[in-house]
Length: 410
Ligand code: AMP
Ligand code: GLY
Image (tube, protein in one colour):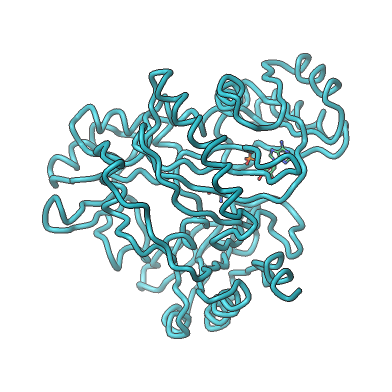
């Protein structure tokens, strides 16, 4: 939560926050599912802007409750957050608006799902419709894997999120992420990034929330970025407005750069993790002003955000065991030493133990971010920071940025 200078003493609250943001914000133990308590806190502290970070409270309608109580919010309404909350909703919207994406079928039971699989053939992609904490997607190389994924979804593994599924045509290409700010009418391109989703080096092993990222994504050339704005982002914002559910906030488009041009893989209704760590490391404009302009429906009056031409690259330090059950409580030392190298250390799953020591408290624990004039230089800066840490319960990939580093070596 952000209370911008324009609205008062310039105080920042974070709920729940962690020891990293505690250097900048006052931590508050707010239950975001308790809308009345959240509104009460905002009233009591004259909060000028609430930035809703994760998808769950957006899909739960926290933005609507806050706006209804007169609190300025950055983030979409419950209806608009369906762009992340329901994969089927987004696919139908793409079809109505002519937005390039993979062919698909929405299915509500195993029989229909298996029939759709036979129509598509392998490879094929199977997705639980709703929010499944990043675990609801199977890219199946064989029919057997696809059938297994279908059975898993309809066996109830994902609860409500798996009451429905989407079967999708498999798309080939390189992935990139693109972010745009919108107040529902105006749109400003924000930035691009690429992440590494697999836990293992060489992009192997199980999927994670992201083991590292860099920005900008050079594969998303200015020409391709223009195509994404024209054929994907703008028609989405227009269709949402025309259908009475204007989308306000940041649109995070997961893209596949196919031989036929960029196609939408999925939308998220929020900033990405760890994409945000690298985009904000390059941002030169005032983020608070941009978010306030979105919340206040005056994005049209804003200059486009300015970014450093440098590359930022972040390496995720995850707790041993991640993406399975992560070890918690491991001591983390050397954060100051890491920052003394020039790297920036963002906290994710960290906590203080009873003695005040910094410890691991989640799957992805730290993001060590470096900057440089090339991806290779940014990578070197990030790993210099990583190497200054002393945290034996954490691990990282040593090859974040490898695609670009290989291209730069050509
Ligand atoms: P999603 O949660 O929809 O972004 O999917 C997670 C990951 O699955 C994506 O980042 C892609 O790597 C992959 N994926 C999703 N949909 C497709 C598709 N239609 N074709 C190929 N890969 C896909
Ligand atoms: N890194 C992908 C996400 O934030 O969903």
